[in-house]
Structures are given as structure tokens and as C-alpha cells.
Image (cartoon, rainbow, N blue to C red; front, side, top):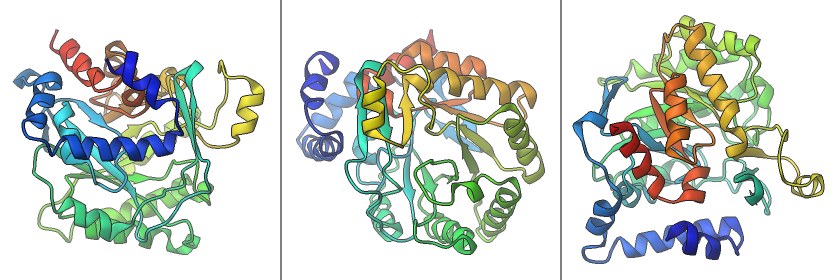
Length: 342
């Protein structure tokens, strides 16, 4: 029903407005008597065989929701009804920020993709914490953290540490988002020496807590083999807990959308099916070249159960949905979990 009826209606309207409308609608219907239970019965697949042990955490299934969907942690309790094994909130920055000017979110329906240049729009750290205090403990929550756009380069690490220290009691794992193409000073955030400094600083902060949390790094899908080798070396030298592969792409290769349409849209990160193979190749390279030395969460272009299986076969331990969830709806989560059981 979602793909045949609901999605065509939603896709008539502006993507960002539809996003906010959908949030309000899900919030409303989940307050109605019996509705959350009905949703769980429709979409959840519960089996011990789906459980995954990773980073010292037990994921009830390996299908998660990627960061960027529930930026401000306002819907994770309701979204848990749809069968996710974990949800990643954020990207959260220390201070609230409006992000880039609108219009900044675009559908490529002919490619089953999305281009965004949101620019880390979020309501800030304190707003996220307020929402996370309502956590009903239904599933694992990840905290994706970043820097404010207005922060000068010498303050980047301080921004990450501010978010890390404040969110530590409320999330189960952390993701250092250094690969979003829609933020300033992108070059410094991908510099190997700076990444070693940032990871080291966050790891030192982690030691100050009685219970330490896993820390992961999210990388871009556009890295070449030399850069991926540097990531493998970085993981080995810093002992960071894992990698998320991958973020959105700046590439516009092999798209069905016309050149005129792409030029009208302009810059931004591409997600969805156009990055499926690229992200899977990154996963396979990291897993193979490192001899599977560290956990990998695979994300990018998962629109079917087979897409998820391909990433797992390539070396991913868990997978995350974003654009595929928008295009295919919650049935995709169920389909992946049922395929994994088979």
C-alpha cells in the first residue's frame, strides 16, 4: 500500500515539508490506542537468530535507521515499532543551526535517489538530550555528532567533545561524522593527521566515564583505494571501534536524471540506489584488505532485501536504511529480516 498509494501522494509535495508532515502523522497515529501494537505486528520480525553481538552491544536485528532521518531524536520511540534493530539520531551539533538555505532536498525519482545539502540543520545538543530522556529502551540508539558550521578550525575538536560528553549517558554508541559533503572546511575533517587527533581526543574523553561507549567513524563512498588504505591504517593505529560505510556521494556519474535537472539542483550529497554499488565496493575493500579486522556498518542504496544481503556478504556486520526507507517504506525492514532468517 505504501509504494502504490501513499508514496505517490507524498511525492507530489516538497520533500522537506513531507518529511515534517510524516513525522507529525506518525507521532499522532502512535498515540492512538492499539495502533503501536498493530504496527509492530505488521512489521516486526522477532527471532533470536536475528540478534547480533557487536561493540559489546546486543542488536535485536541488524537493520538500522541511518542518521539524518531523526536528526533531533523526536521520533525514535515511534520508529522502533516498525522493526528497526537500532536507530542513529543526529547529526547533532553543540548549538542549534538552521542549515543551508532552502530548497535543499531533492528527489531523483528516475534514479530512486535523493540529493541533499541540508548542512547539519538541527535543534542542537540540549534539545536532543531532552528528547532522549524519554527513551523507552526499546532498541539501541546511536549518536551521530558533528561541528557547528560557524566553528573555526581550531574549535572543531571542542565541538565534537561537547557533544560526546553531554550525550554519553543517553546513547549506546557514537559516530564521528567527518564525511558529510555539505559542511565547511571538509578538507580538514578528512585529513588523516586531524582524524588521529580527533579520535584520540574523543577516546580520552571516553575514559572519563565508568561505562565506555563504542566510537565509530563515518566515511565517504568516494574514497580511492589509497584513501581507503589510510582508513584501514587509521583504525589500526587508533583502535577505533568500527567504520560506517558510507555517507552520501558528490559524484553524479551514470544517473538517469538529465544534465539540466542536475545543474538546476546544484551541489549536495547523493544517496539511494545510485550509490549502492559504490558503497558495497568500499565495504568489500575495507573488509578484504584488513582481513575483517574491524566491524563495518553498511549503508547506501539499500532498496531491497538483496541489496542488504549484498552488503553483508561484502563484509558488513550491520546495515542501515535511509533513502530506501523513504522509497520502499517499512516493509523493507521486514523483508530484509525475513531474508536473513532464510
